[in-house]
Image (tube, rainbow, N blue to C red; front, top):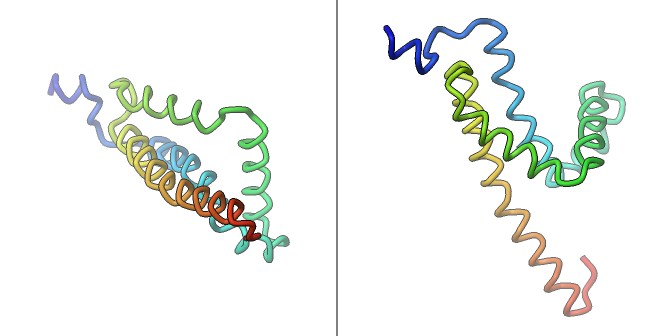
Amino acid sequence: QAKLEMINDKDPTASDKALSLVPYLLPLLDGLQFGRFLLENNTGNPFVAILATLFLLYRSIPFSGFIAFLALNFLSSNFGINRLIRYNMQQAIYVDIALFVPGLIAGIYTLILSGLGVQA
């Protein structure tokens, strides 16, 4: 019982469950560059409007992705936070790292095409 208290492995409350969704905003906002064309046709959708506002705020702050990455990395090792939230923070970090690879490939592809004089 003392170990469970130390690692905060109690049953998550409703607020813990809702808060465990927040870390996934990082990979969602980083992945919007790949699905941007899908959202451009649905401008009347309120979800798209909220997402666009979050994206503009996210991109307006310099190094916001790096800051969010470090914050999630730091907070995921805090045992004062419920285990479900810490787990979802770590998963969001892994998904964000996985999204880095396609972005890197796209950047290299664009660089090669611009070097050859071809417009993408």
